[in-house]
Length: 486
Ligand code: BES
Ligand code: MN
Ligand code: ZN
Image (tube, rainbow, N blue to C red; front, side, top):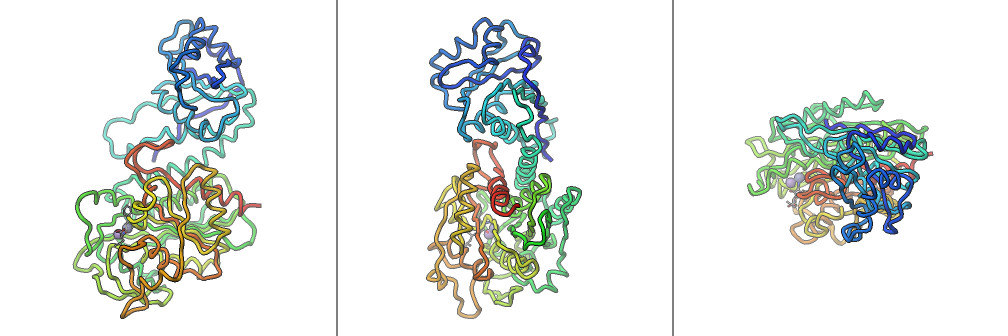
């Protein structure tokens, strides 16, 4: 489990700059004006701050970028970092400034002299989120991480607990998505979710016998070739009144070989992230519990492994879903929709939710359409999709709506069953969404988020190193906060 950086907030004490044993941070806007904190450090360092701020290098910095003065005279600190940031910064710039600090601080205690800088919650969040490294499988001791002390004129205005709740959810999601499949098996995944009970979540693990009784033939056929048992985990957060819950549903394929329709070897190792949808649902539930959200939210994840074996489902097999509809399995690599079909149906059947969003690394076609910048949003509700796009935009998480329409349905009609599980190459992400839509009641506001391109990426992003991003935790947390809480 990756721990958050230790962070404390204290009152401004300019005198502390003289003897700080670590790294000192001050903020200067594009106007080059020094606030009281920067002035103090400037005086101590015999105007080194002034010189830096007047330089071409400072001029060329993007908002949120920084200059580093190493071993400056006049202070005990081994470096002074000058961050370029306006006193009332844009959210993205403030988060970027925090991320810059995470990358610049090294192992040393950080003294962030913010004074009356606006946007400190975003600076702090950027710092916390970018200070992440997945080291569960490194034998070397993890790098030392010094704590951060935020020095502010109004320390009480920073809701550190709230920020930590969000970041803990994001880190939980990233840890799950980064984990290899021999570490995160179906069983260990369920065990990790059961641990969330200590936060006040109600967690149930439905085992195969129960899933069979429920008639989840679509979900079960995906895992039947694997030695790891399939599971559905139900997480309930009841922080609201007696209103119907908001439902989150996630695809949790701990590894997707493609099954009998096996994938090519190149890049197959990336399919450890095919539980990304379930990972995001789990992270959101953790955040809701940690911040004691005043909402009723239920998170359901279908956890399976898609393996080829003598018992595996075959192309051409027909399975019966919990809903009762039959599905011809054309391609065993289109497994996510089979898992979701049953979990979506179960979620509606049992919880009668007010609205429902599912997340899944569902189609490679999503990456062809939107790359790694935006997740695909598919919905039967203008209201819900607009609300989600707004939340995602507010958190800087890319999302773009794509169409759904009955005309696409003919692509997944089957000759021998009620439907088939693939529609061929045209509009591959849309036909997958249409398939899911067949398992959602028309009147229920529902959205499907295809996160194949954004759940895990090859290079670092603004707030995460290469690998799992945690995309969606903040957007969904905000959606719930802004729309489903009293
Ligand atoms: N898990 C994959 C989709 C995926 C691909 C996610 C790349 C992340 C990165 C999914 O189960 C899958 O294999 N989809 C197939 C569907 C096809 C057989 C209709 C695909 O996209 O090729
Ligand atoms: Mn697949
Ligand atoms: Zn998959």
